[in-house]
Image 1 (cartoon, rainbow, N blue to C red):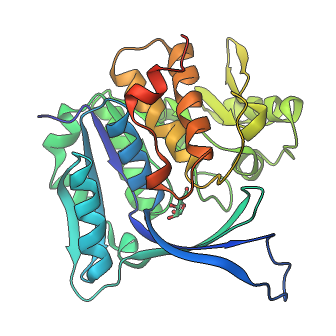
Image 2 (cartoon, rainbow, N blue to C red):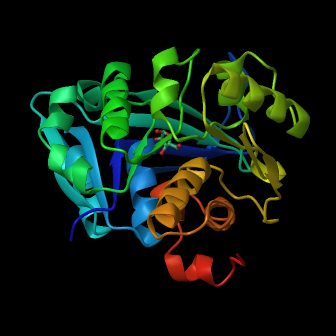
Length: 306
Ligand code: RIB
């Protein structure tokens, strides 16, 4: 089956502790549990797109270690085409050190490992996979020059290109904006990209307008419990979030992005695709872990009302 969604990005093993509350700098707290969970923003988005109805191919790198084997096997079990997932000899797989507090909030430290070895050559070798796709999805846990290459190639091939700018440390290269159809930051990413402090809907709109000024076509700021804000030069629309009891916010943004990509690939209208992705993300928040929390299509269909 040819993939209609291609995700280029990271695969990580998440090393997760649960604590009552997040430790302050310099503080030691007791954790209540420790688990290893399949994660990585790229892989999470690929899993979300696949479980939510798309035919998905993943492009990325794993290390030549046990985690690498487990991460690839996990994606294969989710029916994801992994021919473009390269094993890097002598490298460790990416890991993420995650602390989750009782209210579902988290902190994440990522060590890139093999994800840092993904080069434009890895993408060029599977150019036919990109050519066959409708939607290309990228994040920022792989080298910036590789992301830049994928965005440019996506534009040349006239694909729908989604960038989830996570994690972000500063402004994006200006030339990228022209290649991106949907820029999907969360609050802190919108802040880092625009320079506008984002602490609610009104400031999210100002930040998104700033990103439009910089060249973005369509911006969707994900705001957790406050929903999602769509902004283009023509319109602004707020989508309220479904109310849920939060257990773990890890991969909620990834579920939104993967779900949105799957919905667009299925031909859903933009607003319906946002609502569909929101329901999927809300469900993911009610469950622990990254990939284990991502819902299946039938679960979202039971709740989404386009
Ligand atoms: O977005 C959540 C993901 O961020 C985790 O799965 C972790 O691996 C980090 O990449």
